[in-house]
Length: 81
Ligand code: SF4
Ligand code: SF4
Image (cartoon, rainbow, N blue to C red):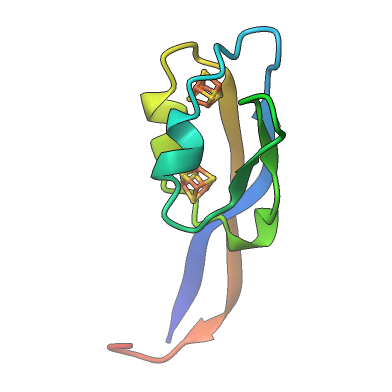
């Protein structure tokens, strides 16, 4: 039996002061985690859907997003599973 470990998302931090309101992160997010606050600044609409792909953090031209992750191990995974 092998232990099943995975990345978990602890928080999504958006620095409004740095954000240039380009909306690229909102358009990119494959899980619709981010939404437009109304003025182009993203807000976290559904953190539970985040898969920690870190695309939003990587593409942000202003380095305004930080995806805070950790590493967690859960129940035993079946062999070969
Ligand atoms: S990609 Fe960065 S600068 Fe553009 S809206 Fe998102 S947080 Fe703001
Ligand atoms: S890490 Fe990926 S899934 Fe999570 S908010 Fe950013 S783009 Fe969306």
